[in-house]
Image (cartoon, rainbow, N blue to C red; front, side):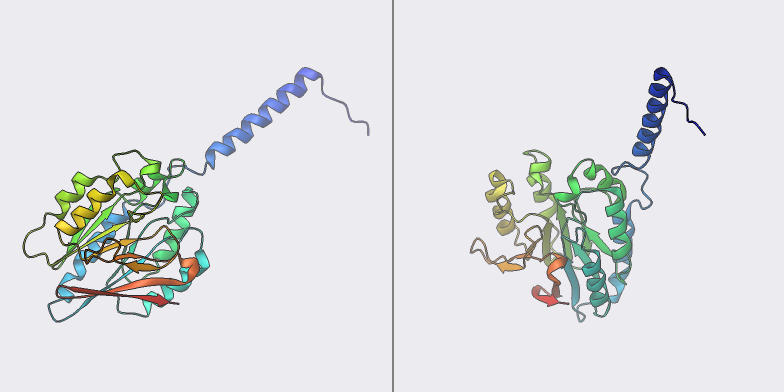
Length: 270
């Protein structure tokens, strides 16, 4: 059977329709699409954390875990979740970079791993989570970029430090100081952010202001991710430890134990 060729104008029309249909599919599956299945996870998990408070008193130490940079390491994160579920942990702090490219699918797939935790988890935004429209997805799926919560006599302050992806107003030092001004019943303050203040990608113009606030308000621990390697040291010889957790690819996280006005930490390998 002989095949007839389409006239040039019909060929052009057919190709145009094919392109338009393909374009529609591209828009339908855009990696930064806002049709998220999960929303307002921070508020949900903060409610779960608050509900745990009655289980803790002055006799029972609080244990929480610090992880970060799970970005695409799904298998390792699955193993980490199993290890955490075998321990007496109240909640998990994620120091940012849930994703590698901030795609909708990445956000959702990582949550589907982390939601297997027996305990609630809360996050700060990482620099990889800001790529493209990632910060918009983060706010829709999780919530505010800066927020805080209390647990018994402890206050946790979660701070966006990704100034290269935003502007010179990040981190918001004024907001941080307001949050650090706590009533007398708060014994311990923990500040959690993705980028440690002496990192080359941190806002170095704000470094000394951040460090001064840590010292002025007697912060117990400054907790971070970003470098993919575990580190714990007093950066500024002021008695305040700066602790960075490794990426899950390195198969470790940090366990913090709080008893009274003391906080100790250890690297957990899994």
